[in-house]
Amino acid sequence: MSRKIQPRQPLVNNAIAVIGEGITEQYYLQSIKHLTNVQITPKLPKHSTGDKFVETEIKKCIADGYSKIFCLIDMDNKKNVKEKFDYAKLKAKYHDKIYKNKSIGTEIEIKFFENERCLEIWFLFHFKNTTAEFATQNDLLRELNKLCRYEKTEKFFLSTSGLHQYFIKNGGDFNAAKRNAENSLRRMNEHATDYTYSEMNDFFELIEKK
Image 1 (cartoon, rainbow, N blue to C red):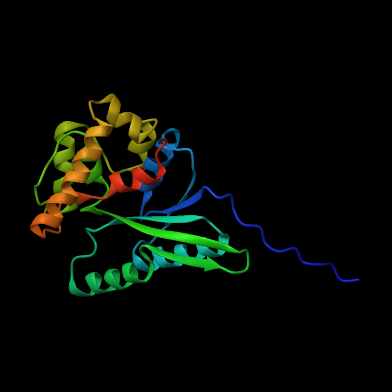
Image 2 (cartoon, rainbow, N blue to C red):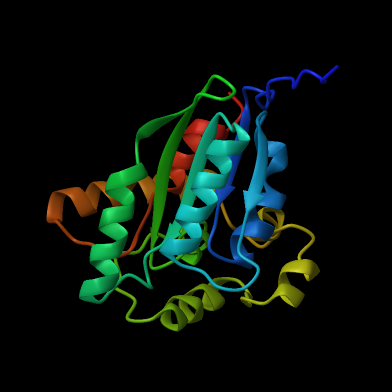
């Protein structure tokens, strides 16, 4: 007698997959678990990054039955015409969309959260508000280092015992970062600029303990 195959079970309703493009996101997400009641699973690259990785992980997370998929996007590698086109196409396909996994009867919400130039602008907003246009990621890192020692290396991330805690301990203000990020989006919308902004306040609006 053949064994009946049981239908695949969905993940718990508050299971969120967060797709990032590097180790910075990995260590930062690990450091904010105490700020949220939801179950966050980082989905990060072992080697290459970019739009292809993001889309591959989105498809995997839809198949796995996550209730939400949040993508943390660095904009510093989306500058030439092809990069802009490819990213715009990816975002139009998935951002603010609901996908169904019929095999397990779930609906998955997908959202993108951008940082220009990269996640470090969100870190900088813990210490100051800025409208500066950083020509390169290194320029941004130098500005952050004026206010708080920071290295974009795994060795440094491990030494902090938590990036979120490290910034707060060294004079950063989480609530100020959220205000600065919100203001950056207001400036962008009012002046049609595409630099020095972070959508991390919107991210925390959805995951933070109420």
